[in-house]
Image 1 (cartoon, helix red, strand yellow):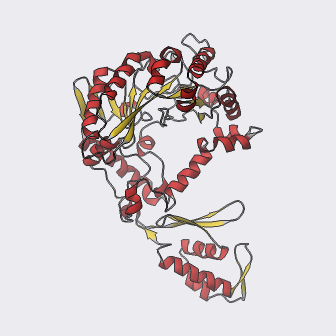
Image 2 (cartoon, helix red, strand yellow; image 1 turned 45 degrees about the vertical axis):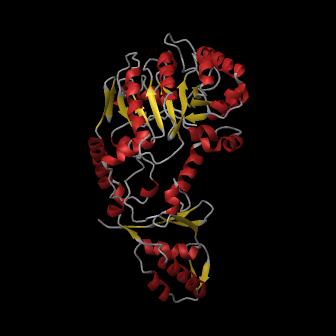
Image 3 (cartoon, rainbow, N blue to C red; image 1 turned 90 degrees about the vertical axis):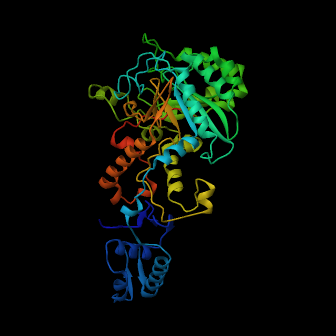
Length: 478
């Protein structure tokens, strides 16, 4: 396989030119002459020969102007200097992307995972038209109004507690989020109360614990005293005003907006400080609202800037595609159709896709971003990487379905569990999980990654791209 060149060339609409060097993780403003030389080199032309064979006293370069031989010589020397210092090399992608997951990696990830998410129940007191477990989609376990067995959840927590308190846990005083998800989790409040009580009995040798929950808010007033007392971080689902929230209905088809608003306002009135610090909103964008509608509604009613997500576009049933297309709305188009999109864009900033993409670019494509102290103090450019942006299993979270299936997150189709938990114990085979993931990596590595320039900054989940649907992540982290 032919090696790929380490650098890419970029030009902005205003004709500013840059090069990005993957190996050096550096983006640099580029003079038109240097840019031209790099274009020659990328097309396998001999830059030295081009410079030596110039005959005219001045040369026209790519519409950027005429440049003298002296200027060309200067930027040729700059090109050579950068090259001598590690820029503009070739990368053996097969070697670079030769990383594999070992069984020990799975165990270490579990000991250091930042979040445990329980699907408390698969029952919901709403029938939202666009629900990820509803009419549009097909790759989830049958919803049978089940509740997750408390004994199973405690088995998993005890299993994890041994790892959390072992030498494999490499961080002290880390906050682990215990999260409750559904269905509507408050429909199984005894489970939530039991798990909170269990966690509160755990020794705090290495970790602190915090609680979070995604909720439709219909039972919020009933249980808000407990949620406030335990400092729950709440992510409440609401799409804006009554018209905007028309797809959020009860089982009988009646609109749920007024009931949701009543519960949210009750919490805001009784516990204003808690509401300000610990409550956030998630709105789904569709054809009955807009970014502007959502933004102004939450600012006016709650003084909050919500998270806005699009409908998931994968895994749609064939019979539902037309109805889905009718309901779908694009966040970019909706934002830029707003008369006041500039102020909205400025205020929402990191909650919008453009800002998120920019932050991801800076994170992956700069040489001054470190995920931990080891990365800051010790850098090894020869480390073999895993292809794509797939999370190493359980490195971020552990998700348990109402049926006891264990998955690396809630966005992955439930037919692809990595293990099970029952009232009798936890079934996780680290070797089989590692083997499964390495098979995924081998497949995608050969098909795409070995010829891609963006491997260092890829955010695509291999597991999702090969098999699963990319459901919007809605379990809260604060």
